[in-house]
Length: 126
Image (cartoon, rainbow, N blue to C red; front, top):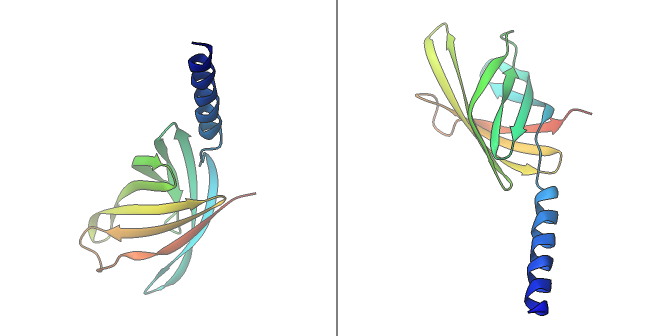
């Protein structure tokens, strides 16, 4: 019985330690994206609560755009941004891989070019 309790305690300790080392994306991240008109700077302000990701992204257009449907799953991150532009409403789906203080994103606009944008490399602001 003592051995079973010891194993249960050890497993609980191990898994709580892993959770403590899980990525927390909360904070500002900077990146650069390319377009046919040249490259431009993006600033992401992420807020993470468990696996839920919210926040904003700001580019050369001025006002921050709300991040929607954000999720962090291990070293993977997904979210969308929607906005109205000169050619109508647009929605961009972002998928990325987290590697410490760097995220590599691929962004695809609905109805946009095949293959989307990217990769976009984000680095945590210091």
